Length: 88
Image (tube, rainbow, N blue to C red; front, top):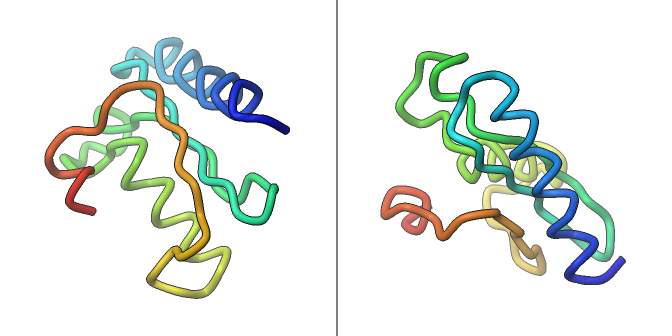
């Protein structure tokens, strides 16, 4: 896949968020050419301030790799991350 195709996958997640009355932001994380995390905003659904797409995707990717650091990973997100997500 190329960058455009990865971003299309993130946009699919944003569409899911919109259908769930969430802020329509989607995010995927890619490692060695494979999507290892995909999610969308779920702040309302989870009733958590940290239910941002980026934070949820980071958690998924960490579980997948069984590591807390995500060296070699690339994140694709449909909107510039907020300060909390940028820090994460």
